[in-house]
Image (cartoon, rainbow, N blue to C red; front, side, top):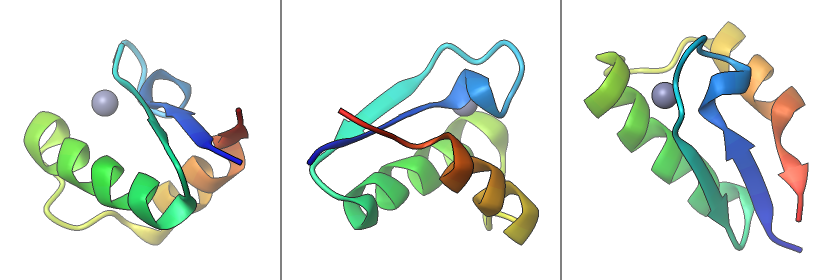
Length: 58
Ligand SMILES: [Zn+2]
């Protein structure tokens, strides 16, 4: 099952979203986006937990 994440669920006002075939690939894309768009070179644990709670099966 594919996984989908919308950044706006965690970061107010961000319109970016991503769909991937699995959670591992999804997190790679999320960390790239976090680095480029939100200046997070590493993602804090609390943000990862929030992200995980918002991931949807599609
Ligand atoms: Zn974002």
